[in-house]
Image (cartoon, rainbow, N blue to C red; front, side):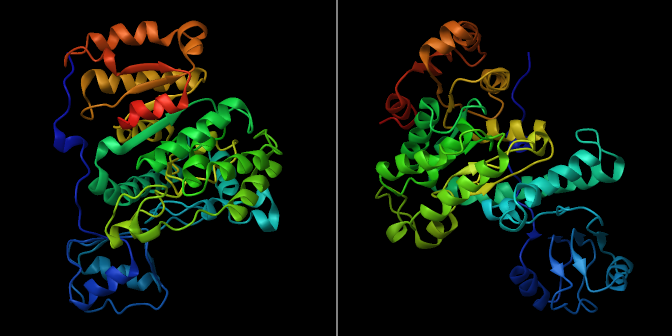
Length: 410
């Protein structure tokens, strides 16, 4: 019988990495970069003098230098240099997660086809898609590792403040149209969870996923404004109408930008948070987290998450969502992709792969017991877990507010 891997295998490891120019300059002033990892920095802008600094064992990955000679000199003095690959529209070692502005860059000038997100997808398709050539595969793997690293950095402050049980995943159908009842329910769910100090995590697609991030994006605003935002989005309900769909999202972002949290408290609540930590968590309180993939790049980007961990590898992306969502997962109605996520999550819970799991909340009782009777298989499976009967983690409801109470203990 499989057993959980040792904790040190699945926990993020602290590494000595430099990801900002300010930190690089501080270390450089100390006279040594030996043994450090320097990721994705533009060292060709205001080029630093690296000729005297100790660099034995230093790894420069995805960094740009003023000249090839600078990189060659670093190698001669004991550094390892993995330069950014030429000809790629994406960074080979991103030092931070994407923002909605990053993915939408170019839309104002050239529409959906000119967006950064669309251009990367076009490149992905042109170079083999899920089966890329060697150069492309290496570039994609470096990119996804950078996203892994940036995601660990971005979530560290939240987990330190609230713990892993505060992260809630929301899954469901990507084809749910804006303005529909399921879309509105998912938006209210995200809104209430964010106001209850839960980090909302979705797969970053349209439909239920966009709705949940939208609710979290507007958690600091009254419910009436969430309704108004959905009504505006509903003028472009179908994600296959890429330009209108994206334009509507950008209009909502412009009209309903989330207010800053007052006095270092979370949106909609009075939970005190230290000033610096509140600054670190601003994105989490303005949309939460989305984890999409360019495998589904034909779907327009979800522009309501505070931070976006976009991967090329769908397998890594799916595992990452479920690994993070230790505070429970909501499954809204969906088809094969959602059902796959149900049992992928159940495998982790059954074997305790990532530690304790939260509740499994299935929205729409009739759907999950009659149309797709997932519960009838899942409940006896979790009851037979080697860690005891875990079937009590399964909840079915038609009420969003009840779902929130289950997930928050309220």
